[in-house]
Image (tube, rainbow, N blue to C red; front, side, top):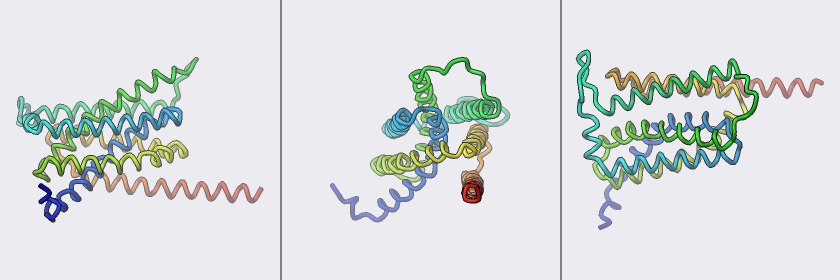
Length: 243
């Protein structure tokens, strides 16, 4: 019954799939971190827990209906010599959602709305959770369909997803607090969401953009922004000591 414990191929598959799930989860972490930044600290933590918990449930649920996922990749109709499947339509809808959301948040950051009164926290929290649920579904479908091609055992896939979600939960808190402490990084994170949205739409239209290029661009931009944050902190410290 426990023959898999001594099978190196199983462990290699688990490690590879876990790393891939963590990498694919970067998109989810960035989106959740941007959304929860507008909530109070305690509710932000709860929203992260709910968001990543639902992402885990969605992925496990999808793994339990693998035959359905195979059907999601079957073409429904063709347009301009490209066959569109349910997966393509989900990716296009998710990409458009990210573009609209990121553009709206960027607009709010550049030209804040004149709000006579603050919206109730409960309504804001509910809206944040609802948006997390929508994007969780999109990322879950893309993530699990990719995982199916890398492992044959459902148990390995579920273990990889659980481990990856634990890593993502541990990372989401520090990332969200960093974005909250440094407002300029929120604009960078929103630009990442625009980039991810375009990539999802391109995938849905049959133009695959290798994720490696996207993640390299994100890592490079994040590194430059971190250097800027450190430089500003040093200048502020030098100015205070001078005065």
